[in-house]
Length: 261
Image 1 (tube, one colour):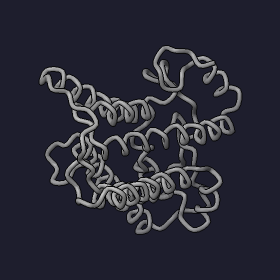
Image 2: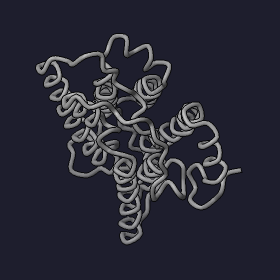
Image 3: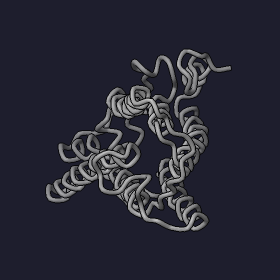
């Protein structure tokens, strides 16, 4: 998830038929709806709020088996999410999938991978730490929810609807080309290069009750984020060259106001 805008261009060799463009638009809208429901469920899943199955009350399984299954579920999400985001894969993938729905298809498969993880997650409820003071516990929950808010607002800062494929299918339906890629650093991006990832880290680690399962989830997703940043920044440097190198030298990766070295 990055500051890149409109990386993928839809070549315009004649007009698509109206029905095909309408189907693509409906596909994009339905996928966005699935993403948003999955995202909201993920908040409840991690926070232990409202939803029927959470990170701490999922399927009961012996510990060794739970670790293996949970690591496999996390790996499926990480591999799908990272591989399909790479430019080399996109160039290959769009030989088979129209460019107008490439991002939508990526969002669909990411949402399904996340849904699978939450559906099949094995609870590991042994407590690592627990905050007994109710006021402090509520403050930690509030901090975690702020993390989710940072994630969501960051996507709007860099074009939420393009990030999740709606912009592409809407432009395709209207017969408009996608704009050229732009490098932008609005608001949060003045302080950290990856506020979306920072928001996830805050949301995952700010837990008044940290179980073994939650700790495994937080640790593995943080490791994935750190690896993913390296891959993403390689793409950004390839796309924007010295413009991104200069930005990288000025702005910290994840810790606000601490310049990178």
